[in-house]
Length: 294
Image (tube, rainbow, N blue to C red; front, top):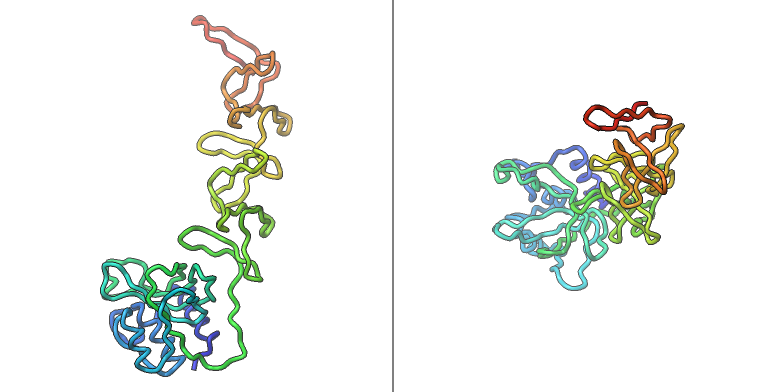
């Protein structure tokens, strides 16, 4: 008989390897097959019917059934049953972590939305759900075991984005966090900002690259160049980079290039690479156009 840890390890292995289980040998990897397999290995009993029927089937066999309602919080190993608007079949899967009362970390089959989902189903997938449309839960009586289910730490992606789970189960939010040597900014809900600007309370601007990494050095953003110091702050004004001088505007921070710019009481010319020209020759052609020659 499955212990709780064995059940969670089993479904994780399916999801990690992009496969599923066909418990009854019919219609591929349906959502029912996954929970039926777990239920059978945990209790020796088979729950029948479509997903929406599983609560009644489980109750008829004396299994612990919990109807969704105020105060109900799912636990790791629970089988959820939910209504699917527009479908008579419902949906089901297994909860893999104790819920925080707001979201459910689950593994489910047949959620890819393929055109042949009724005939062939789909492999086991990690999902994060809310309690919306939940009908209830089945709580199998798993075999006794001394093992504990340890929720994995590290980066986790759900339908809202990427977040980071610490070893103690906490997660960073509304803060900067250094992870594996790189800095990331997390919003109030704990999701990493990426491919976007962030302004702190002091008015300083930062750029979070794809993947959430804080930008440093020169960065091309939407066709314009910006410079960020070694703590990620966007720098404006004069910038000396190696032996060259550049100028990033005070208005929005983008680098000046291919133009004559009045800065203070003097005029400066910046070439196509943004470098300020020193001791350049000036030539005026027959049309009156001014050319700067290095």
